[in-house]
Amino acid sequence: MKIIMLGAPGAGKGTQAIMLADKYGIPHISTGDIFRSNIKMGTELGKKAKEYMDQGLLVPDELTTDLVVDRIHQEDCAKGFILDGFPRTIPQAECLTEALAKEDDQMDYAINVDVKDESIINRMAGRRACPNCGATYHLVSLKPKKEGICDRCGEKLILRDDDKPETVKKRLEVYHEMTQPLIDYYEKEGILLTVDGSRDIEVVFDDITRVLEG
Ligand code: AMP
Image (cartoon, rainbow, N blue to C red):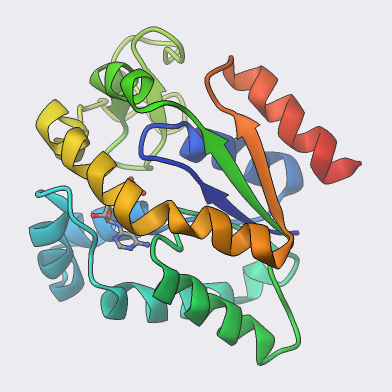
């Protein structure tokens, strides 16, 4: 099963992506996590990506697309994968379509987790992330078992620089301009599934899995 998660930053697509990856036993590929781990390791890619990420801007397509195309060709992706945060522009989507078409392959679903901007701004202020494994939590709606500590790996949770309110506003602007057109793109490809992401995490998840398994 090859799935793309679409949706504004903070819509909850990362949380759904992790749950889907766990349920179906396929890799969760988050370009945001890949960039953040490169920043942490101090790689050249990390240094370049950070300049854009800290301003709420997109990392250029040429630094992003090859990375994902290489990743989906690794062995653990043979049975499928979940892309979270990629594609984020029409050129990225076109490169992905072309890379798969070369092998007579295509994505199965693009799941659009739909949430209004004002709810997103409120949500993001409470979001906390694990700097080690990338899991995300929320102070109100998705608390870790132990306050301030990641359930998965035990690391201390943080408010990411790019989740700070001023950066969130910029990220939403960038989302509407650059990423929202992908909803039409995948609708035309006939693989779009839109879910109302304003509801409880479990309810959204049930909605998604019902369609995937139906
Ligand atoms: P995320 O964790 O998916 O919200 O991504 C955090 C940041 O990483 C974004 O605000 C972008 O700066 C950068 N980023 C992640 N994925 C992409 C992508 N596909 N194209 C360009 N920039 C990206």
